[in-house]
Image (cartoon, rainbow, N blue to C red; front, side):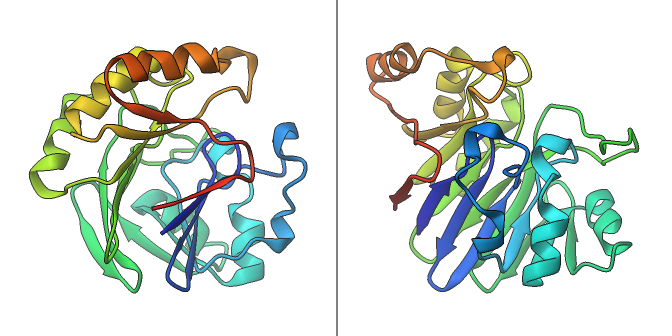
Length: 225
């Protein structure tokens, strides 16, 4: 499994020959100006919620690639009306896709489309591949529901928001990693706007002091699991 950070909460995940994008907000992010969305491959696009900084490039990429958009019922219905392939889910549900099992789990946040219309309830995703399992938390506060995750999945990586203000911050993310029983964390949803700028070295130190590994990737950088 290869995971690429495209800035903010945007990720590329490659499992075998399947390409997955998560919450593509790239063309509107000046920090990701060197990423050309026209070159991105996508067989699936996972969307955690409807805010613009998570769905901005979904339509353009899906139209070009024919990707299947996987999200909650309301978001899937929104893109269905645009003629795009989709797979609707809701909290607690799971589905076996060609690349592995996907479970849609709770997140505490809000969710509305840029025009203010209802975007359903926000969520996160557990992806269980053939060899590795990851948790993509989405935009969320720390929630006790995270303690349910290790009851059914042993995680190899937790991808957690760490920018604070709109989501949980560093200290809560450390607790979240305890709740999901995964000490290997990829941080995201930080630095894009002034509200969510963080001190990278302090963040890494806080995780290190708790015997945890926090990875903060450069935009376009990848890791292998």
